[in-house]
Length: 127
Image 1 (cartoon, rainbow, N blue to C red):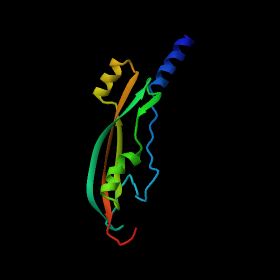
Image 2: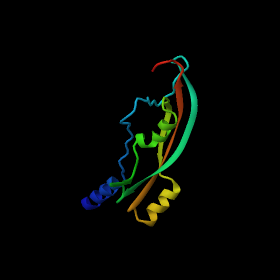
Image 3: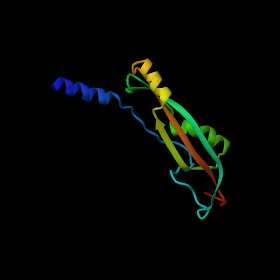
Image 4: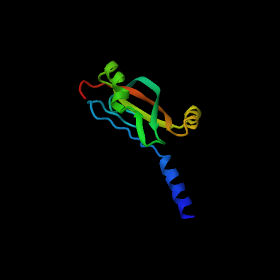
């Protein structure tokens, strides 16, 4: 009986995948909420993109992943003085992710990451 419990717990632990999002460079500000006109900002653009994270061996080894710096590098290059607000990051295990996981018996485990937000520009002369 103890071995069944241990195997069940081990199986549940193997279903976990490490998820972290962080930004390491840039003077740009990133907020989970938006900027207001009272603070001196105006919305200039919205973005919404999807990315697939890939893990191997039931989520133990990360194969394909990006940092927020890599996600936002194109945005920062296109809008160098913009600030990101209303940021929402959703990681979902979608139907097609489950199909790949089922076919490979968990050896390849994809997760779909949806990132959306707004870009704000400062109305003031300085930051």
